[in-house]
Length: 186
Image (cartoon, rainbow, N blue to C red; front, top):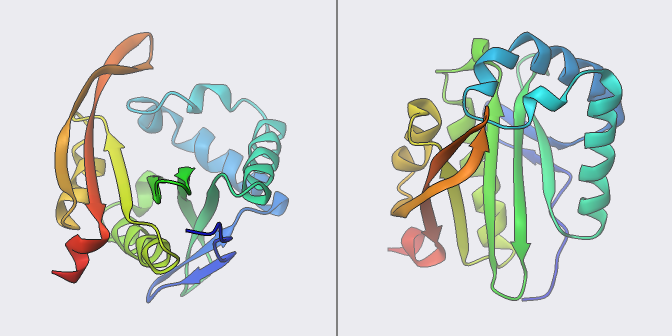
């Protein structure tokens, strides 16, 4: 598969995925700060977001990886009011193996409306269309909300990576789910 750039904008029915822009740094910082306690239960990175400049650095790193075709990070926006509600990314892009991973988070006040499910479907459709064969989603098995996404979207359970991530000074497991192109054509 030839390397292709992912589109900077993916429009779904209720949400749009937009490539990160520096203008989003302040809002992103406010959201992570507002929801840090909830996000930190399962994710290692919120504790490193201490000032707006940390988000600016994050966005610059995302855009650098984008330009190198190594990842594609998006903000998730509601179409009805253009409200930023979280992030989704495709990373660990292996063009030679036609595989990648999807990760996501959403601000707590927007949970439970199906926005992440819609974002995952929109991103996976683009990934399969440009030639990827395999998409992986990993999550902490204690994070029921995050874990419900790949299950609901017919990803296949592959196994558990025991103590593979350190969050809050404790090693945590990650469950691994995947979807391959033939799963959607059957």
